[in-house]
Amino acid sequence: MNSRPGGFDALDRQIVTALTANARSSFAEIGAAVGLSATAVKRRVDRLRETGVITGFTATVKPSALGWRTEAYVEVYCEGAAPPRRLAEVVRNHPEIAAAMTVTGGADALLHVRARDVEHFEEVLERIRVEPFIRKTVSCMVLSHLLPESPEAGASQAAPQGAGAGSPGHEEG
Amino acid sequence: MNSRPGGFDALDRQIVTALTANARSSFAEIGAAVGLSATAVKRRVDRLRETGVITGFTATVKPSALGWRTEAYVEVYCEGAAPPRRLAEVVRNHPEIAAAMTVTGGADALLHVRARDVEHFEEVLERIRVEPFIRKTVSCMVLSHLLPESPEAGASQAAPQGAGAGSPGHEEG
DNA sequence: TATGAAAAATGACGTCT
DNA sequence: AGACGTCATTTTTCATA
Image (cartoon, rainbow over all chains, first blue to last red; front, side, top):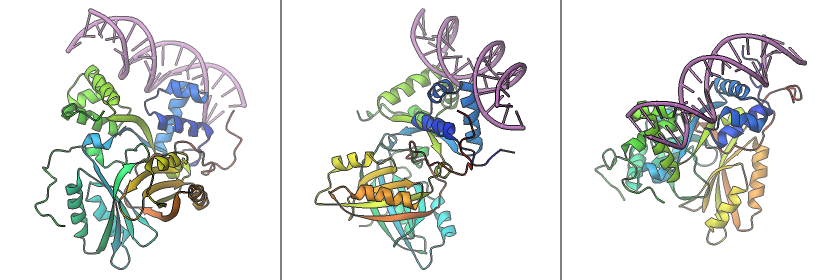
């Protein structure tokens, strides 16, 4: 029923660009920029959302303001062949994992982890390494960002909340 | 300029959470959710933007819908000490770089690159490696995602063209 | 917190191709 | 049929108090 599943023309692209730059601009503003009426822009935006091109609108937040000040990338090495299915399941159980993907190279998967602080990160790491099929992990902490940060989810729940859920009772060098 | 301790309370956190979930929700809607009037919410949002907690609003787009189907992480090794300032400058000149940060470990920086296809990625890589202070790069291509993808911007500008529209020139002018 | 004017969003209807 | 534009109505924003 939806015409062409790939019908994505230059106008749509301009609209997406405008909304990516500022998700709160009005349809009239966008229309002025791309040469359409506000109504026409709205119709296209509605369609772009229905067809899944635009998946949502979010505020970009300085994560440190939310109390998430520690970030790392973790290479995961599995025993034998990496079972993506199983890995995906594990990954979903840890809200601190903002992104996870299988990759080429020595490692089987790469995780993007956000935590409140180093202790919290250590706890996440320990939780992950409990999985029997994970042979080893190699972490690389993010020191500073060279580009303005995009959301990358993960911090959506936003509750620094002191040490409540954070401090594990056990530590390890 | 950092969020003053105490200048960011539970209400602010709820507001930020709401805006992260949907950047286009009205102040009244947010107010209903957090227990404030629309006016009060607006004042807080204005302040959150002024203080840099909220850095902007953007549309989240499914990159594959835009025709960006290749993704990789690139470790950058620099000559001598890595000059973050210089690196940041370089990074900003390549729209395909969705994220970039300095990291611990052997590499000096980690880049998150999005490209249309492998050829486009190779071209980006060559562009980056032209920089004299970059000694070597180690890439790791993303094979598949284990979590629903988050925005991570990057596709904001360029035009991938040809996500499947078939015949161009029709549409309108 | 409330009020009211201005701006935006939304839906209906008509035109063009 | 599909896509656009104009207009009317409702909702939201925003500067008053």
